[in-house]
Length: 185
Image (cartoon, rainbow, N blue to C red; front, side, top):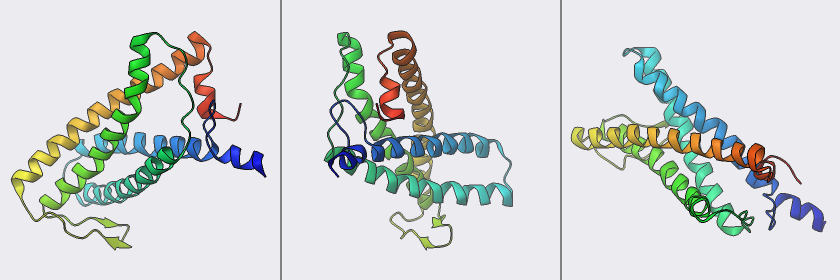
């Protein structure tokens, strides 16, 4: 029984199954949402575009809920030790997770603000509609839209750096950092 608990939970040198699943499922959805957002922004206004916006908002709410769960899980777990790195890389490794979480929270919150300030309700696949927290306010909507768009580009840059760093560790340094997030070692 003890081995199964360790498999689900993080260890000093390994991410547990729950952390790994949350990481990869969220990565797929977040990258998909960024690609979808870039695609939607280029579409002319049409019923199809507004249908895509509805799907985008609903998935964004799910991502926000998963993000909250993931943060609670991360706080409650052992964090695998960082690899021995030169000081600048050590600093980047330590700030990367908090920075990524901050940006990931700003994205859906600015999207909610943008939508509600624009007078558009947020329905989660017709199951539930978010309560109105922000009344119609075009100026606030423009600010929220700018934050949402800017944060999307920042998130794209962070994801690219995250992927490049993982590949660098896996294939250049051969310290198997990527393996710790991929499978049980």
